[in-house]
Image 1 (cartoon, one colour):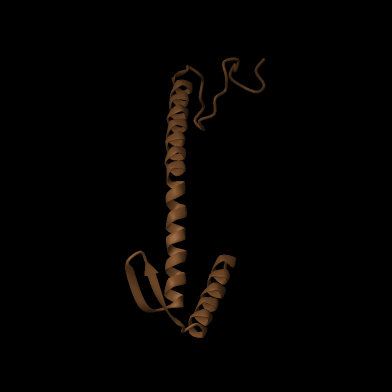
Image 2 (cartoon, one colour):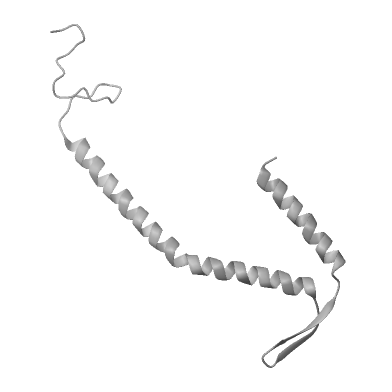
Length: 109
């Protein structure tokens, strides 16, 4: 098994233990809203999920920028390969360029 799967299972077991042991109900107030008798686990999990989404959204502009740069580099590489393919060189059936100084054999001088 992968170490990531093992860590995932360990964290899942710890979350289940935490959920069973913390059955405490709390009241939540946010501005004028009030929610009564909410388990602590729901509050913590919603906070974790909100934090993950917030962190992901903060990284989104950088991810988009890096994808644009990658596409630009790929286009430049494709153009450079087209330029190399346009040059006149002797190419064998294996697709290996022999160069302009190749005269036809190993023993030919």
